[in-house]
Image: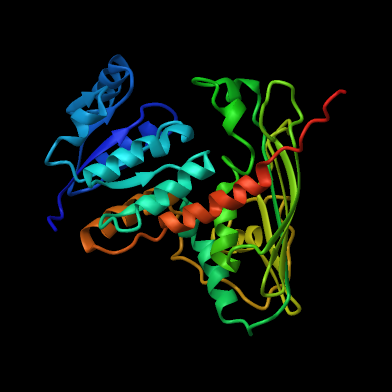
Length: 337
């Protein structure tokens, strides 16, 4: 197809300015439209971002015969309402994570999209992380059947002001592994497959929330692999994510690998020095850590041009969402009788 692509940005808050800036930096891409349910917001965003057309009506946007694809960056509970319309219009789409908050709606969308000839990708940029790619490459050369224990911690600070942003949807739909941690769940699926068994304790620790902000879980995989994960947004400060894989012969630690590839003048105390039989290939001297979202966006565009599947597929997003829902369910509250 023509390498020049015309795109629309659906959604104007949160991460939308980042996408607009990334697209403006790319050749052979025209960001022609921005959509918001508020025409005034759409006009203001278009003026700030140099986008020629704006609308508050999706039908107007999808009727543009020059439009190749859309980036859906609204609140998660609106993702698939828009994606169904993009599907009917035959437009390629990149959907922000998570795929949606409604598991049944996501299942219906995946079924409807089975015969779609366009590209559908869902944001999960950690698959483009060169450190994780090096860890995956090492795992692929291991002997089959080695037992592995995985430890993942993701402990962040997210206060009431964060959850109250916008319409306040985060208080209802922003469970720690449904929103913030779904990237890591996709990484686990990418490395080890879909878990066969999940044991979980999830709870909300603050009264203003309707969703879990603390989760501890064990995920069991068919090939003698188990993962112990803990996530939370209740902390008074955010800590670096920790991701470590242990086997009989080695320990693969994300933080250690990162510092080997991208050394800092002062190494963070959160990552202890460990002895490894494997050192990840180092990038050229001085090469910065890449912008992972930019890499995913470029992959989406190249998938359209080359008529190939994207690196992060709809199927992968469905499996990550399925695990996220299993980790996010709150226990039933006791009922007074």
